[in-house]
Amino acid sequence: MVAPMGLAQSKGKAYRLSDKDLANVIYVMGQMNPEGFTLDLNTMRQPTKGLIVSYKETQNSFSRKSIQGVIKHAKAHQNLVGGWYDPEKGDYYFDSDRAFPEDSLAAALAFARENGQHAVYSSALGINVKSNYEQQDIRIIFDCDMGSSTDDLFALMMLYRYMEMQRCTLLGVVVDRMNRANADAVDVMNNYYGYPDIPIGLERAGVVAPRVFIPYHNMAYARDIEGRPLFRRSVGDDGEYMDGYKLYRKLLAQQPDKSVTIVSVGFVTCLAQLLESGPDEFSPLNGVELVQRKVKDVYAMGGVFGDSFEHDYNFTAAIDYSLKFFELMPKDIDIVFSPGEVGDPLYYSAAQIIEDLSWTDTHPIKWIYQFLVEDKFQKMWDPLAVINAVEGDDAIYQISQRGWITLTPTGETIFKPDPNGNARYQLPGDATWSDRLLKYIRLMTIQH
Ligand SMILES: [Ca+2]
Image (cartoon, rainbow, N blue to C red):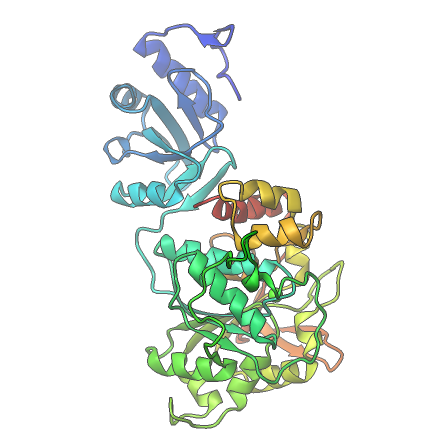
């Protein structure tokens, strides 16, 4: 908590100030906090909790004179005043704010959209969440190696949250790791987050016995002490999953041209099978033609372009399929890679995960950390591809120049700069950036 400079504090209680003095304090706070501030007029402190949204009525208050009007509005509403500097206009804006509880992001975002505000500010995490009230039409197929690392689960969780925020549509989920238990885990997630009808496809002939980092494949069958299933499922034990590449064909055929974003955070096995596929009941086009016609862009977790603690896993583990994918993928479709080194510093600890899910006793991810891996952290690689696909290329990431990327038979990703190239890759951020990204993922975890 930070008390504004020049404001006497006595045993935690602020002296009562005249509105004129208060306006001076708020002006000084603006000078001291170019990155922005929020002030609770009851306590004269910056709140450390709550999701803060500005009211529309005070949104054009950018001179020192306007502060009086902001104070008047705040006193008639929630006694919260905020400020932020707009470097483009060179003005410092002041506004009257409303606070929502930490777990009410959807309500805070709806209020932000109603009030024409671009962002919700999380006081606890110190980050802004875009309200994006000018909605873009982002249609995503999510392709993951569910059943091994939990970052696939967090990436999927982010997509449900983004749908609640009206920022994308999840058309379907492709599981590129064989064994129906891995698809059943997605079925559990779909149901838990309220999207029981999102279709799921499953790899039938992919990587044989890939490495398992966290064996949570039995999560879908977890039972309570009385033997009742813990998690709801809509496909169920008797249901069928379409072949992964077939589901791709079905979904792509239904979509407008150049409209689909593929987010691939596992092996590219189903994608390679899609590209090699021939015409079928869903489309007269072959796989390459169908992808060329329908896909807008691809965000793929994989590759190494700088210094990484670990070798690439996703491409190397499925090298024959990966080589096919690199060979057949149409070269006029943009692809942004999220290499290992970008997610390396984003450690989400088991203790933090359980604490962030303390709002519920029963949660698929929490179950894994309570019963399977008590103290293992997980690096948040996969959510970085999801966040990039939804937030766009300019908002959060530093991205390389354009070029061509080739894959060697030993799994090395080689980048050759060329302004006409279709490929780019995310560059690692500094410690502050990585911390902010992890907090953003955590904010989505604590919602319910
Ligand atoms: Ca993965």
